[in-house]
Every structure is written in structure tokens, then in C-alpha cells.
Image 1 (cartoon, one colour):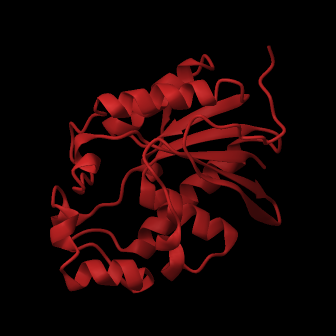
Image 2 (cartoon, one colour; image 1 turned 90 degrees about the horizontal axis):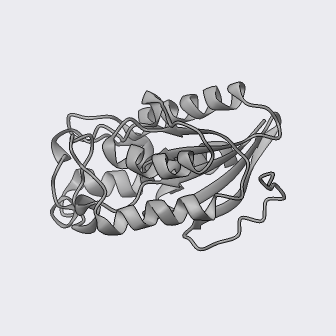
Length: 210
């Protein structure tokens, strides 16, 4: 089974302003986000990536493309990696949402919570876990695969694979332009790295051939 590099997309004007972009179309990386994408590509250039999967949203694809290009690959769009459907919260400022009972429920008891008129947190976790299990079935034990997606999906995937209770997934960190590494084996998974921001050395014992 492979090593999964879970990459959060670079900064955009919504994340910078602490607004929920959700699945809004036309949310692109800003200048800092573009620099983060290039820094990720440079940091991962020495890793023998076999594939780069991406959420189909613009900000993830714009992060995935430089990484894939450095390995002569094309990003593979995977619907299961798309951002959560945040319903009526789309485009809203987090500081305002934080005053609501629904927001507090998602932070404190996410296993029982859902986005208003959107996805439940448990359903999001099941979706991203299924997508990553599909990726694992496609790749061998020594493969290293990048998955470019969104903060909550990365945290939910980590919680699923390492057995962290869903109600504690918000305790994990996931910055824009970061990498989290998971080894997924037949009998369990190991969290190798969490929330690394370039420049970094992954130190996973795998190197790209010269």
C-alpha cells in the first residue's frame, strides 16, 4: 500500500479573509498561494511521485499542476477529494459563523453535526476515506502519491486512518500549502508527518531517481 502525501491547496482571497469558499467556482490562488504551490513543487521534486490526484476545484488544481509538472505527470481529478458542501455557509465570514450554534456543533461534536443545507461531517469523512481507499487500491506498497485537497478533508482522512475519534479531528492542524504524510498498510496506517510547510525534508526513505 502507498504513502499518501495529503497536500492542502495554497492561499486564496477567501482563506486569507477567513471566509468559507466551499465549492464556489472561480476561487483561484492569490499571489501568495501561487508561491506556495511552486514551493511545494520544489520541496517534492526529489520524491518519486507515481501520481498526483486533485479535487476538481480551481484552487486545488492550480496547486496540483506545478507538483505534477515537476514529475512529468498530469493531475487526476477525483470528485471524492472535493471540498465539503457547506450549504448556506458558502462565502460567509468565519467570525460571523462562529457565533452560531451550528458552528459550535461542528467544532465540538462533529460526528452529530452537518453544514446547514449541506453535508454532514460524518458523510464528508466517509467520502474522502472512500476516495483515498480507491487510490490505495490503484497503487503498490512502495508508491508515493500526492492528493491535493482541502483542510477539513485532510484532517478527516487522517482521523479515519489512524483511528482518531471524529469528534477530535478539529484538533489537527492543516495550513495552506502544507503536506501531511500517511503510510497506509493492509493492517493499519501510520501518520508520518503532519502539516509541513516548505522548505522541508520529508525524510521518508524514498528518493526520486536522477
